[in-house]
Length: 420
Image (tube, rainbow, N blue to C red; front, side, top):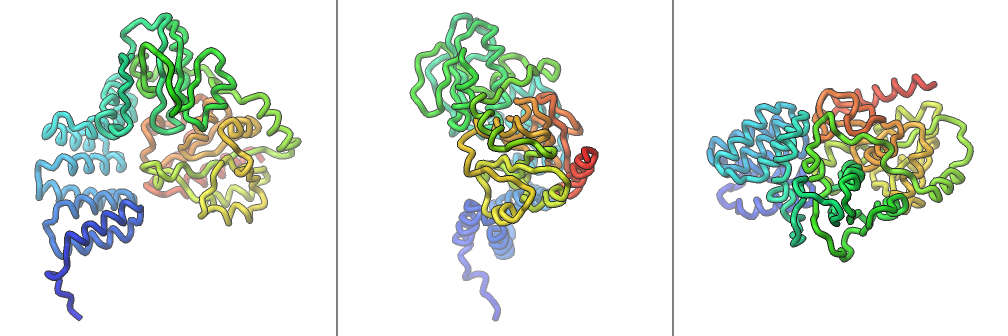
């Protein structure tokens, strides 16, 4: 039977595709966009959205073709130039990506998304002076919804804060909080009184070790303060370069009571202890790029070591493999918050983790850390390095091809075998 395409409501299909995309049912969304384009070959937003879906599926070259088609059909479409830059970034073509972002900025000089994305590339390449400055555009772009007007002056390093109270406000992810928590010590040296807003997951851990500062759980009422600085603006305030990253470690310590509890729980050590974290938060924008399934680690578990899950929550897709594994100790039901996670990490000889908060916490605790990274990693891990300027205990294992974790796992397997 021949379908009369003229009778199909393209706008209804477009809405349906967007709904599938919003619910992360990407394959269904892609099929509908293909159908829409077959009916209406010049539907600009269908090409744009299909390109976004293809990039989420890590089919970046195909996504790039769609963005190029959009720009051909609509040469001043800033969103298309921005998305094109994103695809080029994931392909490691950074100069071309910046050119694409620059095109978006020529059309709209205040296009914050493109300016923020240039910042991320600059930071990825270690060009910190310009990168941290441009990163302030995040509040007018990607993080606009999270912006809070504290009705107090923003401190970015210019004013004296001797004997002044400064609010360090939490933002973005848990790993971000851990990475930049190190700057509180520098604020103390300037004579400031610190009011530290802390994610609830870290409240007890930070409170137990930080007796100098006023620790407030995020979401609770704030006492009076004189200045504020979002925690990820502190590198800008301190004019951080690659050579001046604060590297005093460990700058987080485990709660002694929790450490004793977990030491007793694990008992005497018989073999090398390996902590593992194979996935991050599902709601993270590029989680599909950084996270693995536990089953992908299977070859490691044949080694004569003891493996310990460091997850508080386990995804449904991993529960069956975890429950059937004889060489993985799982305590996720007993982990209350990061006080327990930190104490568990302290008992490990090595932690193997994807790019998530567990990796940052391990680095902050100065425990040996092996991180699995995608082809183009988050800006803080830079490019082509096997070490980290942020965590001296870290070794980086990078993908050599997009979405190919096999070689990464093989490299880790070979490295672990040297401990036999």
